[in-house]
Length: 259
Ligand code: HXC
Image (cartoon, rainbow, N blue to C red; front, side, top):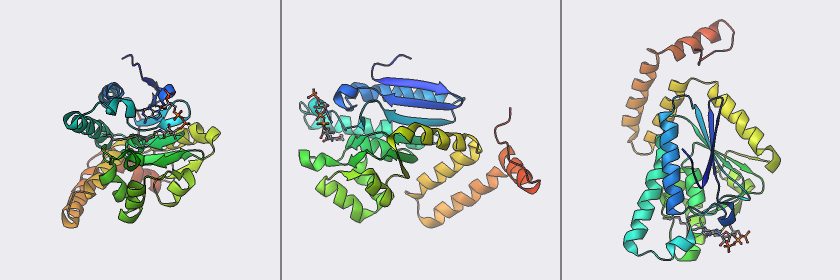
């Protein structure tokens, strides 16, 4: 499909979606969110994609929701918009394949909320990260108040949401908000290396791991442990565990994705 605000590239099992509205620092309009939703459906339907990368063109990852568009909102439109973003970003969490946010610059407001919905966050050292909604008299509405604390803890989340201050990539890494910080010119290479690593692992084991960890946020421990034991057991009826165990015992590299 052709997109106005997205560049989509697929190669060797990896799909890169670059948000491409650089003149507005990739601000998320309703139209752009609709395009993202379509692109995510396409990725879900395409069995040949094993890892998804989200990034931005120009100097921003995403500088947030489109503030100009929000100016005209009443409460009904605002709620619809919030639910739209939550639904679209939620698709990344439910997606069976791993999703990497390549944070190439500003990741603010809705932009950080997009990154929070990804499994991995790699940031370039010039990235600035934050949830500045409070400075607009608002609160995050694409999941930030709920998801940030689960990643960095309640104290840090309150600091970021209630003060609205931007933090550097290095600080974001220090508090566990991003997994790695790299030089801007190395971002693509580092993200490719992570994607290649993920593509070399078992697809079913990866999707199971992602599902279990995401589910842990909503489940009492006993239920989560029970689900883990059943999932662990199920993996023994597939090929990946056979291959992984056999490869280890015969001192060779496993080949999880043959054929
Ligand atoms: C609309 C935006 C925008 C945004 C930048 N632009 N961010 N337009 N929505 N979120 C536009 C600017 O208006 C400008 O357009 C162009 O992009 C370049 O931006 P500048 O401000 O000139 O760039 P710079 O001086 O480098 O400053 C970069 C910046 C600043 C620090 C990132 O743009 C900024 O503070 N942006 C807003 C960040 C923010 O508050 N995000 C949270 C939004 S609320 P023109 O046409 O003038 O050239 C949110 C809510 C999510 O995300 C939940 C909703 C339910």
